[in-house]
Image: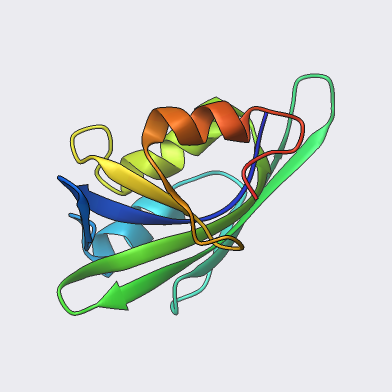
Length: 124
């Protein structure tokens, strides 16, 4: 189970850039998820439960900048496979991503983020 409070951004070499998908592409892809509640402004809540009945929830917001998404804010707790589904709507795994811990401002690569998010304290 992943726990996190992050901003997901595009990553090119060492500088951060916009994501490779548009606001409309990400919105349309997220709308297809079961138990996804998404508003036209890009704010969303996705809920579900583990096979053992434990609930999980992801809250997010698509942040637009021109033709492409600037970043996506995500916070919550969900299984890694569900997290991967969200990342796929952002162009992953084809497009590398950066994960900014919104409280501290630290930016992590994917592997470092995944290790931290899987801990009991999570990536907050």
